[in-house]
Length: 491
Image 1: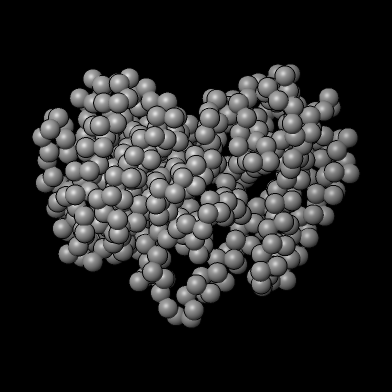
Image 2: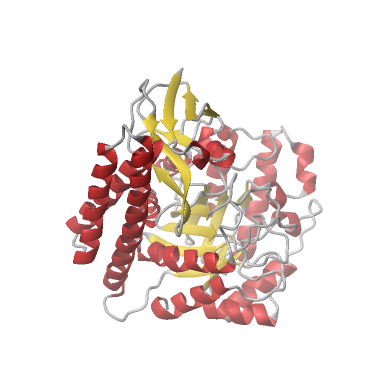
């Protein structure tokens, strides 16, 4: 039985929620199942292995907010690690490594930013020297984290500016897709006007629950109107997920077949075949399956889900060989692997599908930032960039399905029962996240498109207050930021 010990200073710096969200990962960045406790002022991480590991934990910084900070790779030892110092060490290491990597490919870094990085390393050395005095070391480590966080933000901004300039080759506009999910209702005139200002693409969900609420009886009225509207306004159209691993997207009658995999396979196949044959030639991309690594429906095992996804890809390819097909993976940092045993972490699941040569055209990542459990915990832009690079390993186009909250209150229209740190998310914070992270996504040459996956707070949705229109159906500030970004860099 492995055990890693961390001394947070002061002990009251740690909350119960931070303890629940902390996890360990190995060199493959996949979390180990852990049992985390906080006893006698110590954070204890119990696990079945004793290999070196990185600790990931939410750590609030005044003026910055709460982000996941990560230690360097640490060995197990009897003496507890001083947590603020190790978080500072890991953060500076990430900063300097990324600076070196981007400089090596030609990034031009301002002298002021180089000086800030040097300042963070000097502060880290000072914190390490006095680590026998936890109070003094922790105070200095907090300064390191502030300096490094600011430097990371500036470094990412420099990268985005220069990467976009290269991609645009002067004043040319990018052909990347920027869109949003239309939901299961037709858009009113106010919403449609704002949508067209912000986006050049749209996702039509083709929700099975609505299309075939009664077995064998199809209602295409909303989907037909949505696709017609998209085509009339020259929007790029994606559709799906055709195979949703989400109980809220499945018709109720399908539950009668729970546990009968062979018949479920037939039902899924028939529905997917019917949708593709109806809309072939009217869709620019098929989102073949969604939440394949995290969705838990109908008592399906991970092997069942892998077989279903492979079958779905094959059906779409056979009925529409010319339209790109993507599969979507939820929570790409795989925080959930620390809470349960799984056979296929998301990157491994994707690798199995890509290498099976089924004809997959791209990979989509679902990043619902800030929500816990079931979402992606907030990270700094450098870690975000690193994760996108990791998912670009196959050279396939990358798609991102994203949302972020604008309110921390309970949401009566949300399906998910998730938690948000009080006061951390506001309409301004949602807009600031969009302004910082969406340009970073579009700066990546491998990213083909970005889709905001919730449009309305006023209609049933997955994550609390993650829409771009509020409860009164008014456009949020984040939508205006997306519109400005679209005008500036996209066709």
